[in-house]
Length: 117
Image 1 (cartoon, rainbow, N blue to C red):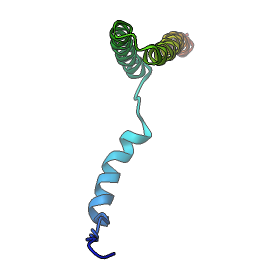
Image 2 (image 1 turned 180 degrees about the vertical axis):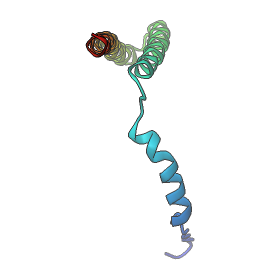
Image 3 (image 1 turned 45 degrees about the vertical axis):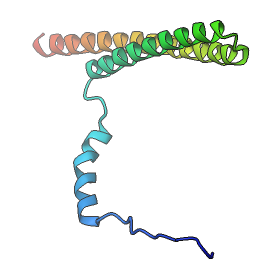
């Protein structure tokens, strides 16, 4: 221990402040998507982000190939494969959300027709 400095910090959060923050966030955390439409917006943004990542990985792979970095190219190939899998899953999820929106519209119109008819 000679020559070593030991520091201790009190990192305990203020319980009153923490309660206020948690109360303010709890509503958001419990309902990340208010509607199917907001979930669709999120999925669209996710899809765009995945595409940007894929393009960057492709560019990185081209650079690695140019430098003849075989293991790096193989790792990037695997990353591109996984990103493509993720893109497929997000496209499927977007289709499912579209289906759910259509079903909801049908149910709402049937309910309205039954109420008025």
